[in-house]
Image 1: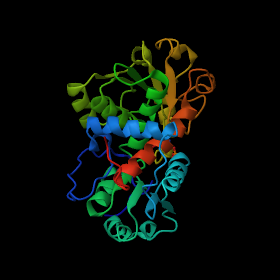
Image 2: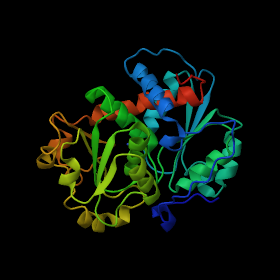
Image 3: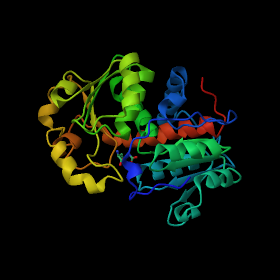
Image 4: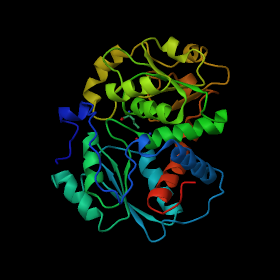
Length: 327
Ligand code: CP
Ligand code: NVA
């Protein structure tokens, strides 16, 4: 399979059909439902023990993680690299400019070859089917560092931040304001798997993945509305993301028009529950999806949220690559 680049229109399409992975020997983390609810709860407890400094094991001693970035990154790259080091392992950064993947080597061959050298692969790429193909052909765990369809490590870090600042996620309501993008899709998965309410306010034409949304609507308290004020009313968490994700830069102008009344500002935050927190995966565009006085204001928890990437991903690596039990 050829790796898609930003010029390829397929990158901007959502690809809902996920074919089953065939390697029963290896566990991957491509989406939040790759873990069961009890496993997700245990993973979050492990991440919390790491966050508060109660975990000193080095389960990745002598092991290596290959990190493939087909898109830019600050947080994902640094938190995986540092996290791997803290667990006793070694992380390698691979970009399409340097690796043969960027010159057309098939992702299947890359998966097979890397599996002979490293004990885990983290990949950030465009079409979700690329990471599925990587996982299908790898004989080591593959971890999703973001695709066009999902950003599961980020949303688990966000749930850890809810636990840190709200004392838990059960019974809470999260309001998503903005694009029905990879973050929105992973929030939908998280709400369905972990049992909190989710209200999404997305403009027409920018809805989340219909398959994920349809299932979550049937099985959980997940609703799509149009008016951000309706989504935010009484919510415990208000969260948003950029209007144009990576690979959508050419749509910035039309998206700015479509999302014009979807800015999270102080007036919108006033409609949330008392004590509500604001989250954003970052990078943020102040004055677009969020006003500066919200992201830099007293309800914002975005820096803890960014830190929690480190703890959640360490927990994922410890479990998938280091044999840490999920108990
Ligand atoms: N939130 C997030 O994934 O940030 P980066 O793009 O910097 O990795
Ligand atoms: N939705 C954004 C998230 C960045 C971390 C993107 O895909 O670019």
